[in-house]
Length: 134
Image (tube, rainbow, N blue to C red; front, top):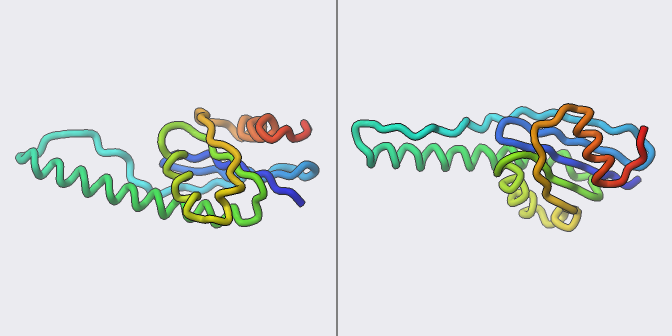
C-alpha cells in the first residue's frame, strides 16, 4: 500500500506522520539531543571565543546529522515524503536524507511551517497529499 510520510523537524524534535489513502494517520515523536545555539559572548580572549564557537558549531552539526539518521530509519517504507518545519533544521535534514539514494526520489517537497499541534500536523498531510478528510 502507498505510504505518505511527512517529517516536521526542528533542532529539538521531529514528528514523523504516516498515512495512506485508507488508514488512519500515525504520528511518532522523536526528541533530539542537539545542543542549543550558543549566544555570542566574550571570554578573556576573542580568539578562544571563536575557537570554542567553531567547536560548538561542529559538535551541533554532527549531533543534527545523527538525529537526522535516526529519523531516516523510520522512512524506509515511505513512497512519498515531505519535509516541513521552521528554521534551518529542515534543510539540514534534507541534506542528510539526500545521502540515502533510495529515498531521494521519494522526496516531494520542502515546506516552511511553524510549530504545530497534532491536529495541524494531520491537516498539513491531508492538504499536501490530498488525502481524504475524516
